[in-house]
Image 1 (cartoon, rainbow, N blue to C red):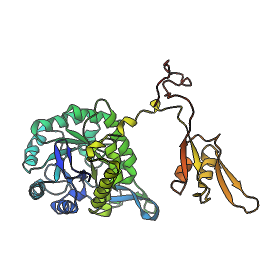
Image 2 (tube, rainbow, N blue to C red):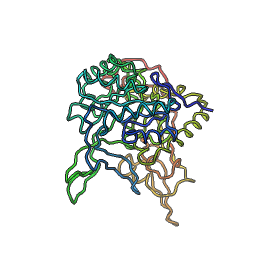
Image 3 (cartoon, rainbow, N blue to C red):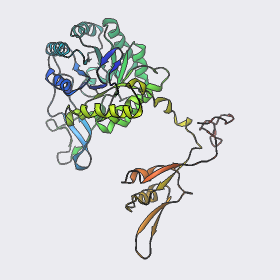
Image 4 (tube, rainbow, N blue to C red):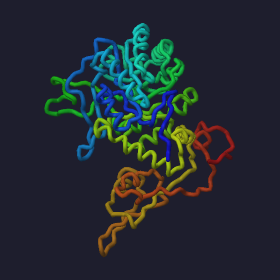
Length: 431
């Protein structure tokens, strides 16, 4: 039986599934319900200075797929709008009642060392296991010199992180903003400031959609709107890339990572872990489906680990990182060709249309003169192995990409003679 317990930057947790700092972790009532459902930890919704922040109404909007499936979620909510005293009192009691669960306290304050020095002992006194520095909030707070306004400036990230390491003994997790050109820069700064870990991604600047009658974006607040923070399954690919960038960067390699962004099931979590995340944080999926989704997450991850022979999560954390590289180091001699399983093909023609109109015209449409039945076959000489036909096919497994034996050794772009700047290296390496 797989062991789902973890130790993340010194913080023990019965499983790697934590709720992210957000509305689901804004009060004791929610957090207790989450722990009863089986979550291993929570990051308490961001605390700030008193008086507390004031939120607007309404606050959320969504990007929908077919049948109103929520693909992406947008919010313009700020940090906690409850007093610091109430939050600290509730954190103290919940930690006392649930000693085996991880409680991390998210913090956001102006860039004044005294403010941080004053609040940190109060947080420490609650018995919390660690703090998370919210350097990612993209709306409302940056206008006040906080949130993403700090996370986008590596010097500020390093400075505030160092303050927290100076004035607190708790593990410090730095939450990074994705609204930046290169996420490695603030990650490096966090490490330089003494951070015990980083978490990412925070939400992405977004406008989901508009009311074309009122000519205003959602969510609507008194006839106006603003950009908000985008999250949910749609941001997962962006989050995975940023996690991988930090995990494989020589300057931050080995820095513990808490993965966030579009995690809705055990497979999502396993992917984040394979790219270097020691634990994962969930928000949108819990808001859409409730706290009980953690049951499927735990069960699915445990079953998969048993199937693969992993006894603990640490055995596969980061296992995909060595296989993630820069484009220029990919094998130029590797080749795949599409293959259509005629027994599974439903003759819809989507692969043909996609390839004929927008790709390489490498699928032939054959029409039987007598019956009018259409069949589709790959023209191997024209196929470049782009995967478009496989992606557009509605039948999973009907089209596969088959590796070809080219008889050629590994050769990357830095060695390719077609590259005008290729290095003069004898190609003997293989993969």
